[in-house]
Length: 442
Ligand code: GLY
Image (cartoon, rainbow, N blue to C red; front, side, top):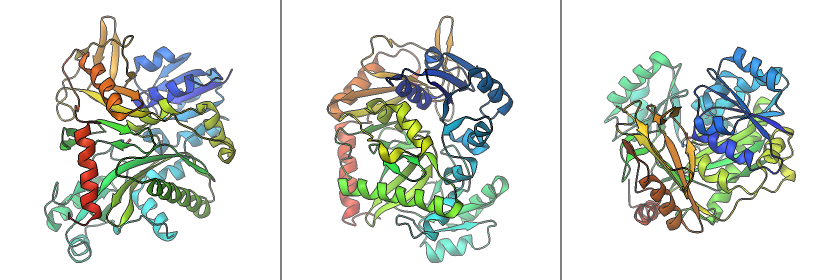
């Protein structure tokens, strides 16, 4: 029987474990988690609780378990070199080595990779190791429409956009000064407008295969208002397109990811094995790359993994062995809507340690645990996204209803975005994209 080690403890990793458990090969799952996720713990043959970059604890666990391969969920252990470390123990991983995780951990690595290899979809950018020249670049080259990002992992926070978080070049200079206290450089990019989508691809270092595109919702409140979050929910369509995105645009996006994979191999001599998650924006000038992540999206993993028809164990092995070209990757033609339930006050002042009650047994939706603790008397939230509910159906309206009904049955001081996956919001996306394509905005 195959033994699979999963590193991580969120709802994304619960979805990964769920997909592995559906494999006809019936693998045994071993979890390395920084906190006990009850959903994951219940699926695991055994688990270990430790910091995800505690390689001594990982080494002990690996020696006990002797896994056939590992799947790495979050970016932090990738950034700490967990794949390189596991490889010294003879364990191969679905996940890139530290040097290639730079695709996510260094914004400039990625922008320069695209630039040096003439890969389309790049945008105007400049890296700054000091604040010298920031003001001039913004005023003269970017026409005061800009985005400033720290050059490193920020957990989805830290991206400041002109007109929203920063009002002029002077404020951008001040923000760069802040960023440079904790990061070696800041990156200033042109601001673009359009609709965002996530295209997650498997890569074995040579071949790239895409999963259905998904749209995430970063803002806390309905109508895309309020602060940014880790992602409040996401949806995908049964035809594996999005309503504002054509088949040709999806194919072009996949080609860009393939070109990036080839460029990595050419420039570094190393093969990228794992997930290449491309965050694209469709603009009036076509596809533009916002960022790459080196892992499955959270919540996006909860949309695509449950509808994957292919054996996920086989897919992981194809990624590791470089045989992805010999595999057909297929997904059910089902629509999905994922909604996260979060504690009241999230993300700024979440009420910690509050009880949440749900009836998982009778839920029509899939239920993925994130930041929740199982105590003797029930389930308690911590301070982050608590539970992901996923409705799956032939059409998106029904998928949305399934997710909503499941959430309505939840008891506790929780909040969620009711508008994700609704007809109104989907139509708003389409209308916005139409206006953008016609040059009617910005
Ligand atoms: N959904 C955003 C992320 O996973 O980074």
